[in-house]
Length: 123
Ligand SMILES: [Zn+2]
Image 1 (cartoon, helix red, strand yellow):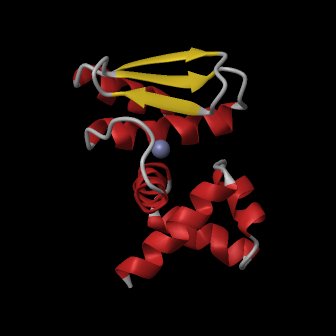
Image 2 (tube, helix red, strand yellow):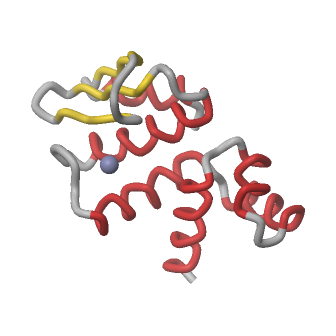
C-alpha cells in the first residue's frame, strides 16, 4: 500500500493522520484516534512509520507496547508494504543484503527484517 492508500483506509475508520515535527518517528493515540508521523523523516521512513502506527490503530493498541508486540506490529506493517513476489525478486537480486533489499523495495531495513520474520513464521 502507498501512504495515500494507508491514510485513506485509516480516515474511513475515523483515524486521522498528521505529519509534524515530533520527537519520535511516530505515535498513535487510541482515545483521540490520532496518528502522528514525524514530518522531518524521509518519505521512506514516514511511509514505514505510518504503516506501523496504522497496525496499532487497527488493533486498538494504546501507547507504546512491549517489545514482542512492537515486533509483531512491524511484521504486520511489513505485510502492508511488501508483496511476497516483490520481496522474492529483490532477494534474488540482493541475496541476504538487508540494506540492498530495503533500497530495492523503498522501505526501511527494519521493515525488511520484519518481513523476513514474517516469512519464517509462515513457513
Ligand atoms: Zn509501535
